[in-house]
Length: 110
Image (cartoon, rainbow, N blue to C red; front, side, top):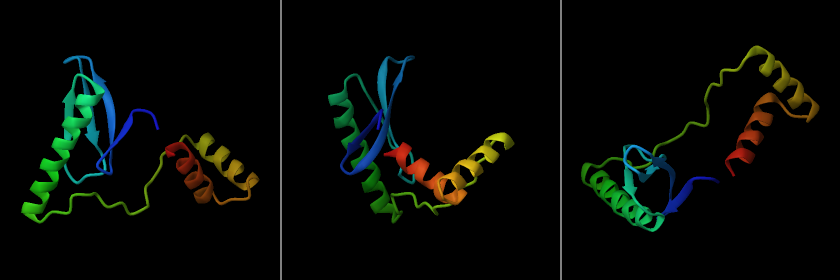
């Protein structure tokens, strides 16, 4: 996956912030903000470790679950013609629209 690093078992998205000329990492599977900045990838990983450790410690102290929970359900808004095309593509693949979308998401996120 592009622009994703794993630090201590948690995945973070990496972007470049042109205003401050630094790399920015952000853990997205957590219940709160745990972002971090550095000038190199090596430094970014180290800052990510520190940021994650501080976040997890704060969660422990406050008795908060650190990771977000996901229900497995979400709504998608599409142009009606894209919706119709997806229904046809799913049927042609012998799948329900839900199965077809879930497989597409799984493939894209891998």
